[in-house]
Image (cartoon, rainbow, N blue to C red; front, side):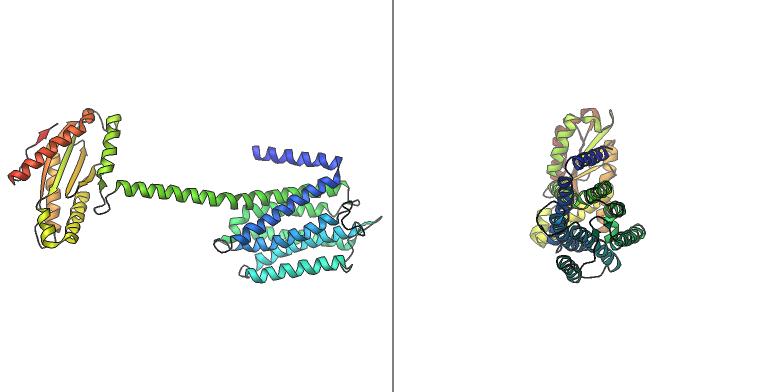
Amino acid sequence: MRRWIYLGAMVLALWGVSMKNFLFFHTAVEFMAIFTAFFIALLGLSTRSFAKNKLFAKLGSLYLFVGVVDFFHTLAFKGMGVFPHFTANEPTQLWILGRSVEVLGLLLLFAAPNLSLESASVAFALSSALGVWSVFEGVFPDCFVEGEGLTTFKVVSEYALVAVVVLLLARLKSSEEAELVEFRGTLFPALLFTALAELSFTLYEDVYGFYIVVGHLFRFLSYYTVFEGLLLQALLNPVRVLSSQLLDEKRRYEVLAYLDQLTGLENRHFFNRWVEEMEKDPSTFERNLPVALVLLDVDGFKSINDTYGHVQGDAVLAFVGRCIRSSVRRGDLAVRFGGDEFLLVLPNCSEEQALEVVVRIQSDIRAKNSFPHAISLSFGVASLASSDCGKLRDALIAADKALYEMKRSKGWVPRVRTG
C-alpha cells in the first residue's frame, strides 16, 4: 500500500511540474527512461557470462539501443534547441522509431528464445542506426505536421504497436518458459502501461498538450515498473544470494565445529556448549525425571592401532559410532567425547534402562563386526534428576570413575555411581 502511495505522489508531482514547465517535465521523464534503459544494458551485458537467465543479457542489448534512440528523441524535442533545424516532426519520428525498436525487439526475443545474443544485438543495432539515419536524412515517413497534427502514418503505427504489445502480453501470460516467467511480474505491467501510453499518443494535436502529458505519465509508470522489477531485483538478488550463501556457510561451519567428522556424532565442543545451556536453563528436560549419563570406551584401542594401523583404528571408531547412533533414541545425545571415548546423555532414562542401551550397543557391535579382531566396550553409568541438571559435570565425573574401575577390573558388570 505504501508503495502505491509513493508512486501516486510521484505521478501527481510530475503532473504539477508539467503544468509549470512542460519541457522540464518531458526531459525528466525521458531521462529517467534513458537511465533505466542504460542501466538494464549495463547489468544485463556485464552479467551475461554467469547469469542463469540468458534473456536478461538480450534485454540489456535491446534497451541499450532503445536508450540511444530515446536520447536522440529527447535532444530533438521542440524547445531543446540542440537541433535548431528540427520541427516537431523529427522528435515524433524518433519516438515512433524508439517504440518500434523496443516493441518489435521484445517480439523478436519472445518469438525466438534460442536467438543468440550476438544475432539479436546486430538486429537491434542495424534497425536503430538505419532508423536514426533515415530521420536525419529526411527519409523516415512524416509523423507530425505543424498546424495539422499527427499524420495517418503515426497514428496507424501507434495502433500497430499497441496490437503487438497485446500479443506480447498474451505470450507473457500463457508462457511456461522459465526465462519469461522470471520477468513476467515486471514486463507485464510495464507493457500494459506502454500500451496505454501509445494510445494516449494517438490523440494529441499539440506536442505540449494534455494527451502527451498523460502519455508520458504512463511512460514514467512503465519504466518505473521496469526499474523496480528488473534493476532493483538484479541489484538486490545478488545481495540476497550472497547473504544466503554466507548464512549457509555459517551453518556449515557450525556443523563442522560441533560434529565429529569421523563418527558423525556430536563432538566434545558441542557437549560443552550444551552443558552450559543446560546449566543456564534446565527446563529442556521434564522436571523430576531421571537423566542417565553413559561413558563408553573401546577396549584395547591402542593395541588395534599398533597392530592394524591408524586407518583401521579410525574405521573401528566410525563403526562404533554407527552402532551407537542406531541404538539410541531420538532425543538422546550421542557424543564422541575424545579419542576412543563416547558419551551418551539419555533423558527420562533410569540406570537400568541405560544399561539396556549399553547391552543393545554391544549386541549390535558383535552382530555387525567384520573386523579381524573383537571389539568390546567398557562403560560407566551415572544418573541424576532432571531438576539437578546443574550437576551434569559432577555426574560426568562419576561416570568416568565407574568407567575407570570397570576397565581396571576388566569385568562386564559396571559399578554404577549416582551423581
